[in-house]
Structure formats: structure tokens, C-alpha cells
Image (cartoon, rainbow, N blue to C red; front, side):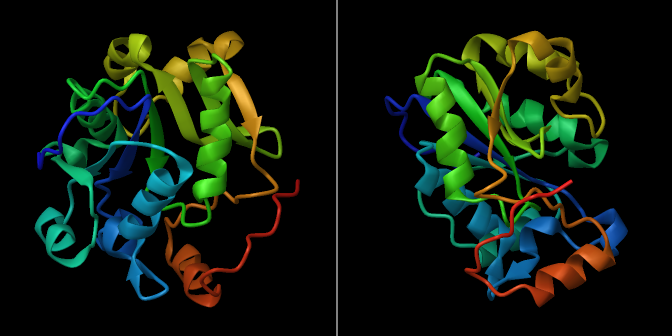
Length: 215
């Protein structure tokens, strides 16, 4: 991991950016471009601009190329050698990397959701300021990302993270404690998973406000 100095931050950002893009022909998701720059830059910037500090970026597929290509000032880069096991391993690596940062919570985001920006990050962070220690963005009433996890929950979340499920099992088991924060008017949770998704990414103009999610 590339270290940055520990601070007194309340909420750290954790960007899961290790995916190898299996359904995209093995193209590392972090390096997919939008507006001429890698998605990892856009996602890390959303966490930073939305109020997270520090921001830890978990790398896996094409990690060396991401380090060489992406501009990630002030971010700690965390290598996940087990990235092929799925998102759960990256979540575990990201949470473990926060030891010693002083963070009281982590805000977890995905690199392949380019239309989840700083506004959604800031809105979920506001739930933490309101004393919630487990919160998630919601779109059309459905839970999505980013997800805020209080530090007291990190060990349990990491223990439940397996395969590509990430924190899903933990969140499902603690539904009554989860604060959903509607972000439908400021973000859109589209994943870039398939060639059709990639075509949509190419078709949208950078900087355009995303349309609200509708059922």
C-alpha cells in the first residue's frame, strides 16, 4: 500500500477498483475511460469532493497500469492480490487498510458506477453526521452504493464478505439498522459490466447531469 499520513478524518472513502472486467473481455474496469480519463480518477474524485478523507483505492487487475496511468493525488493505493476471488476480497483489503487512519466510518463506492458522484457521496455522509453508522444510497427505493459502514462494524462486515457479494450479506442481515438515503435525483447507479453498458458509457457526454432513476 502507498501510505499517506493518518489524519483526524471522520469518514474514509474506500473505492473498490480491482475488477478485471470479465464480461468486457478482460478489460480492467479502473482503466475504462470516460471524458478521456480513467474511471478510477472519476470515482476517487467523487469520494474526495463529496467529503471523504482519506480515500483508499483498492487495486487488482492491471494494478501497475492503473498506477502508471491514473492521477490519484492524496489517495492511498491498496493492492489486493486476491482480487480474482471477487469483490469480497477487495472489501476486506480496503477495510483492513484503514487501520491507523482514525476514521470512524468507511464510505464504500464502486469504480464502475460513473454516474454516482460527489452529490450522492455527500448525501450519504450527511446520514453519518446524523448519527447513523450503517447507511446506503437508495435509487427508486432500492439499496445501492455508496454504502457507509461504522468502524465498529468493519470486522463483522469483513467476516461476511465472500465472492462477489461484498457487504450484501451483512446489510441483508441488518436491514432494520440500515438507513436508506434517497439519491435518485442526483445520481444513477448504472454499472459498466457488459459491452452494451460500455456503449452507453461512450454515448453519454461527460459532465451531463444524470436523469433520475424511474421504475
